[in-house]
Length: 263
Ligand code: ATR
Image (cartoon, rainbow, N blue to C red; front, side, top):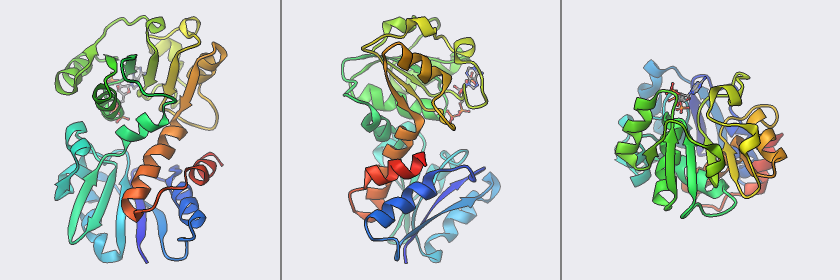
């Protein structure tokens, strides 16, 4: 009976259990496998993870605020996990803990086309921003990074590539990715971020990693201007599909996962 879980703090709002249990059911694996949410505070994280293999867990997702701690507890790191400096996926195998990062490739898989050679603006230099910049730079995009606290974007670019930008013209990019928390609590993206509703256009792709009950103000404005939009749930689905394949060895039923994540 292999078990899977998402570890977070808080974790109650996570759509991962619904999404992964739908995937297991769609493949007829729901009798054997299960996926649950586990609330764990930072000071209990390491102990909780170390106990999991003995409790029948085959792997786990790790979400805020544990993505850095997940690296520290692992015996082995995948290349992306090491380079991004964060892990969202753990695998328990052969007495070892392996850390992987599927956030980076999940973002790439959520895009309608390859970002190679495209001018891209990444907003935010936190954990989510790091995975996005690493993915886009590696794919050959021309990446610029804006952050409210400029020193953070300067440091991020020194480490991962891309160029820090203090005052970007949002009309000048083919791809814009919001990795900041702006919009999560109803903040106005056009107040807090260097964006203007009138500067979106057809031919742009706009991604908002923030998701909630419906489309964010940022994506509504981008879509109204004719831009292609990708929401945070699609990015969640794509990272989840990659994690699912790592744990089960099976191709993930992405449509079932998307339907459950959006329900
Ligand atoms: P995560 O791992 O989700 O990226 P984080 O490391 O706390 O979380 O980063 C949050 C990001 O949202 C940061 O880029 C933060 O900007 P600062 O580095 O200046 O703090 C950004 N952010 C949060 N609230 C913001 C706001 N009101 N306006 C602009 N940026 C904001």
